[in-house]
Image 1 (cartoon, each protein chain N blue to C red):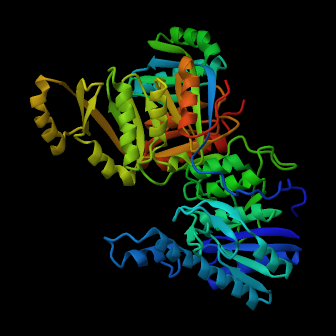
Image 2: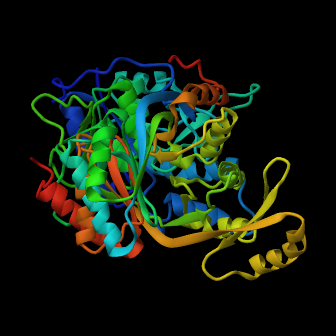
Image 3: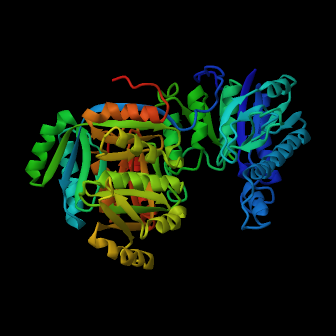
Length: 456
Length: 168
């Protein structure tokens, strides 16, 4: 039995016409001799009656000051995919094909018990196999599973987090030894840049698992990185295709590539849509610098704030925090008094931003009395708000001599200030002002993808 | 249609990779370079001059960071003499710290896991390994430390994240 997993996103199933187009693709696969397992997302996007965000907002609207219990929130969110599954299975039946709808739990998807962001532990695919052997098309609700059974209680429904339906598709592909997993969306494959910025961005015919995971982590929205990681772990060929065309799409495969196709030198240019706040702590060349850095990391961890773009110099520490955590971080840092040295030999007090705040001035005033007995030192914190990260994904190039110079020159020549850089085996990234993002994507795409200016 | 593609290896018990840190590696033989480039337009031109001149020698750089007055990066220890010559030719003030190693912590979805950096910094602090520079990607945090303390740092990280012993 040649099992083919076909996943359709929310915009592929949001109208009767779109559902019919998706169903015809499934029927064609069935007619071609495959046993299709269809995974669907909730119908439509925010505002559509059964979209995940609509269901979340509905629950929260009962009393915005009381956060819903995560277990109940997962139950609520899972409804969107269950409705979509039933609708798709019924659509297939109306077109003359026997189909069955399964929830994630009924499909045998077992997860850990982290509500809202569960990880797939194992899959018991007996029910899916039973229906496939009976000749049925199986439609599985994406984005959900059930937690491991505890103390004999019937297991709870869990959801897999953002992009969870892609994860479901890849996980089912792995568990069922599928010949391939096809992810259907509203673009015709993985692009070299966001088509909203570069309308004629190319569609890549083939890309490696590592590269697609990298571009997804760096902001591209075409495929969730977890889906790529599962496919890579189990060596399942993954395709990204368009629901509304018959174009071949993009094959995601191992870094050796597939027969007759070579992986690109430059995969593309990505950008993160969420804003970032970049902080530079002017600690100074003092013996307690490492201790202050450690305490700052501990403070951010206690506040559950993710840090990235960490950078050190002989007298500073810098890192970035997500924009939506900035007000919390600002409250924690501004006027913060930290004893350092063992036993405490000095106090450091943090001043955030150019203008001292009332909180800082009050703290400073209270510390004045101590100034005679213990040294009080100020640490100024520069704040660069509304930044974002633009990345060049180029696994074959990122360590080539001269590539960072070309990357920076491209941005400098376009008059784009680069606030910080990051580099890895897979990519070169820069932090730029939000207002420069589109320009940065355009000039990097032009130089590295269109002109291939790195070529020797 | 799909016959020519690599075939799957078969079903495994665990479908997804475990959460959190999965490995700690050490890469030795590195040096850290700090060049005073100045700031403003002059600084930008100097960034390019430094990186171009070093690239002309066929030298690869990593952990490139831009600071107010400085540009910093890491190179292979074996490239230090050539890097020194380049920077002397440019007439820029610089400092090279040799005998460093990169301690690489590998984790799934690092950027969505708060607190990993704090745990890494705590482990390195316990191992008396001072962080000279860091780099982070979605699946790794790289810390540049003295080569002398690198294996102690890796052991401390492995203990912290309950991994097996590191093999030098």
